[in-house]
Image 1 (cartoon, rainbow, N blue to C red):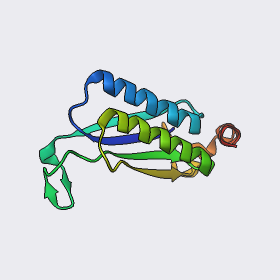
Image 2 (cartoon, rainbow, N blue to C red; image 1 turned 60 degrees about the vertical axis):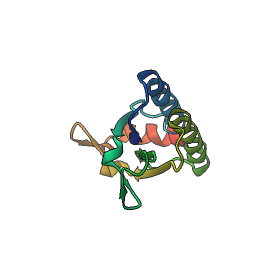
Image 3 (cartoon, rainbow, N blue to C red; image 1 turned 135 degrees about the vertical axis):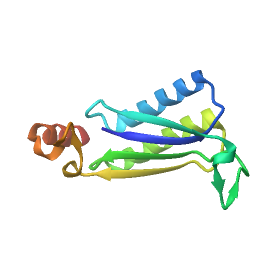
Length: 132
């Protein structure tokens, strides 16, 4: 269920992006193994579309990653994942100031195909087992 949005500057070639999302997926999959439905959206920003500290176009976009993830993962597991994500993005973009925000969601605030995940007891048990 993890869904992430990676905001980065333009310029990385397709092979670099493939390696990046594979490394990001693997890091997230270790932390959130259930279900195997991890989505990463790359959003590229041109220099003239990024303002940092009030200056438009002053430098390439500093990478930022926002991930919507389920609650319940141990803090040490998240730390490991975050280090791996940072390494993958640093390798691909070689830029400073990579920031990640994890938005954790309980299953009663997420629906798939219009069905609230908390209503599926098997799903609740499977997730509890996978994240413990």
